[in-house]
Image 1 (spheres, rainbow, N blue to C red):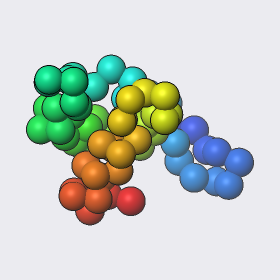
Image 2 (image 1 turned 45 degrees about the horizontal axis):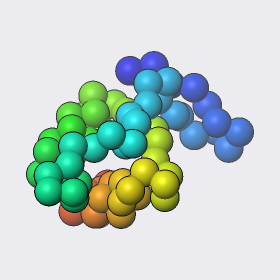
Image 3 (image 1 turned 90 degrees about the vertical axis):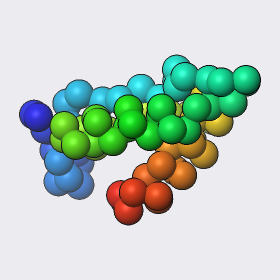
Length: 72
């Protein structure tokens, strides 16, 4: 994975993961599938995740996945 420094000197992955289109099941985010996807990206070195409150629960889902897996 390639990284760039942010203005604070932190390494940020050039490749990011967009959380707008998490798979949904019965109108809710499929957390099991989303977790597999996020963890695959994380294990590949991704540390930039794009999410927003207008993405329909993606912020809460991402937070739950990161907390469950001990990722800051």
